[in-house]
Image (cartoon, rainbow, N blue to C red):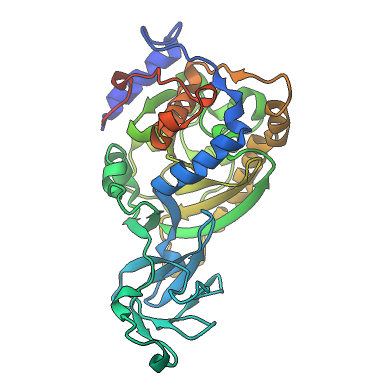
Length: 405
């Protein structure tokens, strides 16, 4: 992890440079049909979403043993369960008898998971422990009829799921990012609020507006642009398609940024850079999170069709204990939602544009390097040999441009 002096030097370089760094690759046009071609969308579903760690929720949603949450945003029926022993597990919401759902409520609490169709019952370890009319199931081996598990791992109080049983551990996937995240104390952060937005565009179009600052002067002239020095923006590329942006603020704290009296408690361990810059991470495949001393939002972009998206916007902050929720949380969230509306205003128009007869490819520049790096990593996960040649992102970003720390 770089020290503050090193990051300041990078910001100064970006502010004064006359062009991209020497030797940095020029990007070929990104094929426009990656946003419109059904074959590519199907490959994403079959490979990207099945092989990636996906944000599934937060422990505050299932705070006590027995609490469960139904999680279906990734297109699969999954139960997240706080077990009676204090752990957390994930199972397909599918009875091993004839596939009926075990739970139909979005959230709840249960000592056991019992199928409402024929009464098969499972304990918190997913084991089949009882069924109706055992005499009619001759020699049924209960040990072979446990619920189908889903990989689930915790990062502090954040929950991530993976449908690939052979996926590498979460800590390995996020290894270069973990030292930077320690200052935010994920194990302490409290779930504050969640909004959901329906967008009429491909999920990548929606996500990409949060992965570069090239657009800031155009669509945020009264909100973000007056306080952000976009010319000093530093992009860092990490293995696996993850990325980081550090952009210096023209004002020196986030209270001034939102023009409110901010009574939200600070995360005291947060250092100088998140307090004086916009520090934002894009996390493969579908998350963006700008973090500061007050907490963080998580943007989660979920495809609902090839040209529609659900944007979930989660908020997490330092725990305020038993006191009333700080009033400025609502004010700040309303302010931020205005920025989100600015970011998403062109989604449907862009979708129409990329679907037009004329649209070909996307000529990305150096400021948009995180976008190209992300697309290049998507192809690596899918397997570039599985992708039709006309839809591939040419692998032009070589390993020495990717940071390991």
